[in-house]
Amino acid sequence: MKKIQMVDLQGQYAKIKDSVNNSIEQVLNTSAYINGPLVHEFQADLEKYLGVKHVIPCANGTDALQIAMMGLGLEQGDEVITADFTFAATVEVIALLKLTPVLVDVDEDTFNINIDALKKAITPKTKAIVPVHLFGQVANMDAVMEIAKEHNLFVIEDNAQAIGANYTFKNGKKQKAGTIGNVGTTSFFPSKNLGCYGDGGAIFTNDDALAHTIRGIVNHGMYTRYYHDVVGVNSRLDSIQAGVLKAKLPLLDSYCNARRNAARFYNKAFANNPNIITPTTKSNATNSCGEICDVCDCHVFHQYTLQITNGKRDELHKHLLDSGIPNAIYYPVALHAQKAYKDDRYNETDFPVTNKLIQTVISLPMHTELDTEQLEFITNTINNFIK
Image (cartoon, rainbow, N blue to C red; front, side, top):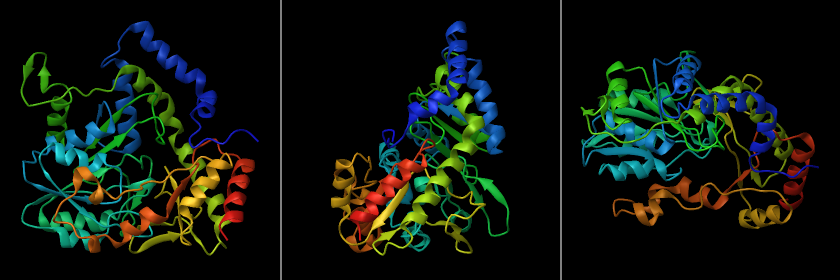
């Protein structure tokens, strides 16, 4: 059996080596390292794939979130609601812009923002909602958009983990994750479903005026060189990374399908284990696959995350490492409990699900190169330990 990787980027690269190398060589031969032709070609390709009017590439996913908020004109003290159970970048940019982060609990089955908690958190100072499509599954955007419309709020989708996923609305309409709210953001960090070979990110919107503002912000506030019309930052996707992404984008759907197939194997192997809760797929309150159905497209399994219910999560974590099986705990500390984001406004009773998840979740190897032998070894090792 080949060595198990948490993410096997080397194995993936071996299959696309020629196309990736050709793209990189094109950049090297032209020396168009910044805003070169491949950046614009990738931007156009991604716009077509997502079905969105505007894709604005930038330097990383965290910048994408910050720039989206800057583009919307949010002001100091404005409240922005987001999920407590996610990576810190989501709340980090809110704090950096001197906005007020408001953290709310998540759903136990999807790990995404809890709609009842979201409704309760709205105040006259609330200006935006940031639903995070965690681990690759789209949040309940029917409900989020209805709430946003009712209260005249912006919606900024944190799509760093769910590019390629579809959301099916209650009326049957489908739309790509990241293109539903006022603006969406993503990360092209190497381990993402669509990852480059360094840092990268992008912002999506169908709003022409917002897109124009954001294009200035990512480039020092310039539309004409040395004329600064808005306050901006330096956040550009370099041409080499764009070349890598252009080579990989046509394979994104196959990558997501490979991840779903691995998730199906995991789910089936753990189905009869009473101490393991496996991931479910659920778009909204009326559209739930439960198991990962044959036509599942609402979850792209950036992570495959179990809940261990017998109190042995930490023991399992160590046992897997000792057995040569990489794994991770996403996330061991809730955002409301992090030193940087503690606030007297929060009560522990407001976060029952998040506080449970940080004690029970564990993420298994998940990537496009997993084979049956590896999956059998991983699942047998877990089932033999967790009984």
